[in-house]
Amino acid sequence: MLVKAAVVVFILVTVFAYVMLWERKLIGRFQVRYGPNRTGPVGYLQPLADVVKLIFKEDFVPQGANRILFQLAPMISAFAAVAAVAVIPYGDPIEVFGHDVALVGADLDIGVLFLFALSGLGFYGLILGGWASGNKYSLLGAARTAAQLVSYEVAMGLSIVGVVMMAQSLSLVDIVNAQRDTFWYVLAQPVGFAIFLVAAVAETNRAPFDLPEAESELVAGYHTEYGGLKFAMFFLAEYINMIIISALGATLFLGGFSGPFLWGWVWLAIKVGVLLFGFIWLRATLPRLRYDRLMQLGWKVLLPLATLNLVVTAIVVALGFAN
Image (tube, rainbow, N blue to C red; front, top):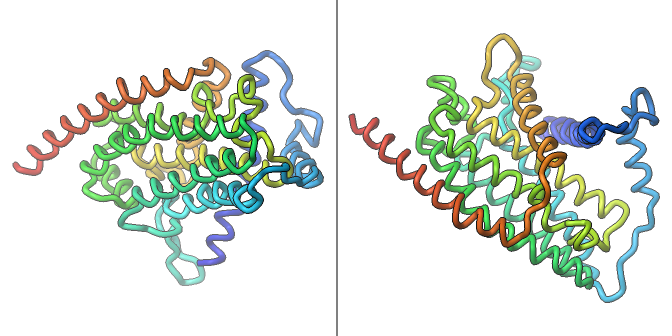
């Protein structure tokens, strides 16, 4: 189990580094300029150069900061992001040296709830980091983080409940297997999928919902006072959250690792890659919303739509199972 966890975490951190490079190259293409292309062949050693640069940057704690919470906040965000990968299934069980090895860290009966709990824990890191910095811009970033969280979290939860009702399980492995026996749930839950995608962008603090770290207004928001490895942990948490939320969307609505001819992890990687491309495309295309507009979108549009979708799904599922 420890070996499998170490391998999965190593792959996840490697993927994080190259997703960051992929984003910089794509943004360069979108903006008709060169992306990173100087460090290593075609720029492929740029992530390693970034890590070395961050390691050697000064590690400081600002005057007036709460030292314990200031140090703890980035660790909370990074831990919550990495731990979430434990319940994402990425293939059927395989045999290694005569032993069956499940390609999922832990097939929990409450896998969906576990992911939501970790998501909420990760936001504590952002809010504590902004508050503990002793900087008014950081505090404003933390306040915006809280406002953003309450704007979309309920709608996101309701968009997933429709899938859970159809699969009759909170286990992500069961949800993938249920789609194998029927069809991808995006066909039955297009409204839920659309709401999930919008909420997922807000969940990861990505443009146009990058309100907690708006550089032009808050200097960098909740992580203004962070540098070196502590800043890298916030950065790592953001990108791993983006990978995890894409994997969750692929698992809930796009059949997860199921697909013909190719290995399961290849299918999951393709689906995650498509969703990640959407995140990057949005960043290059849309301007940032005001936080009050996001709250209006969350409470006046997403929540009513998610509730209506849930009621219709409940009626259809009840009638189907009643007969």
